[in-house]
Length: 126
Image 1 (cartoon, helix red, strand yellow):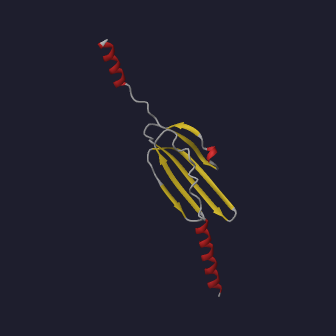
Image 2 (tube, helix red, strand yellow):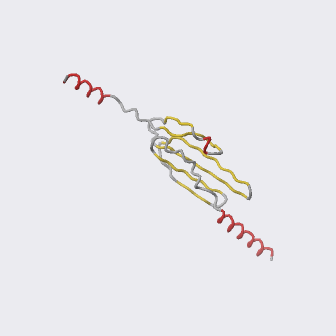
């Protein structure tokens, strides 16, 4: 019995852990529904990354979402009114299910930019 337990312990200690991360993956999808394909990340890729980009000009708006695996975690975001971009990451099994839809172009910032442009044009013309 002791020999069996010793052999089992040796086998467990000698086996490499097969803990690879699984993330959702897509490239330049127009919606989060198109980004639900799971992929197994390579060794050294310890983060799931979601990149979200949206634009809004008048009644025209668009968004693209990209997801995948990464070895670094580049959390960042910017919102300049007409366009917004966000990069988020996480590090657990299929954790990048969200499409980062909370990052949207700000209508308040867009309205203020349009108003400032109109005032500038009126002053130059006067």
